Image 1 (spheres, rainbow, N blue to C red):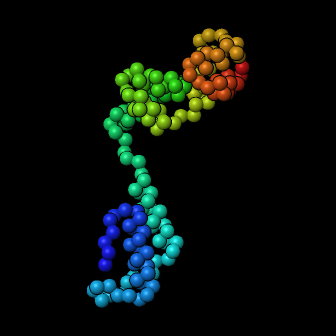
Image 2: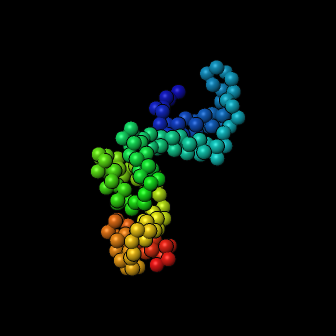
Image 3: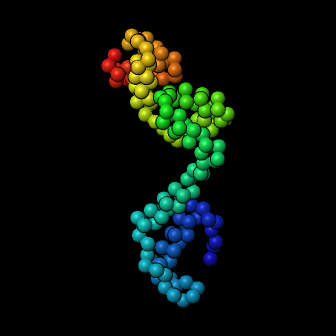
Length: 155
């Protein structure tokens, strides 16, 4: 009997070997019959599950987790653009990779963040439509996000 390493491919080969043996009615070394044959769909599902488990991303590092939590805290208190939030996290001492991870993991709706920022600006100052769009773009929002935010607040 050939032994396979524990990999997704090896797992599939082992399952296929077991299925073939069961279909032929071949007995194992102990003399007992194999379990009922695994269907092709079950074999495929088992293989996909094994591959998915092998491809899962590793858990967050402590730095990534802290960056994510910091990003969440900042967004709880103020509106940020994606660029602005990454810049803030880097200013706090996170590496560029940690900051990018934290922002990506939180994944806020950037259009809604632009609308919140637009409203905050209008609460404290007067802006024309084009002036507020320019201000939001300066803060790191894309042109489309800035236009969405300004439209959302009625300008």
